[in-house]
Amino acid sequence: METVKSLTARMGLTPVVTGPLQISQHLEAMAHLNIAIAAGQNGGTNAAVLYHQG
Image (cartoon, rainbow, N blue to C red):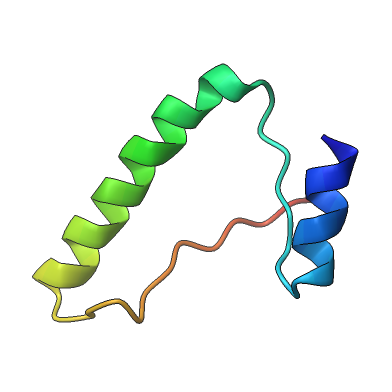
């Protein structure tokens, strides 16, 4: 997990550790929801969900 986190950070992204790989199915569903919301508001691919860690 640390290797992927480090690689992500070096790519200029902010890694968010969500837990075990089994969680990915939920993250995939969230991505589809984000796409549907963005497309519905004419946002195209220039949209994102921001999460605050703190």
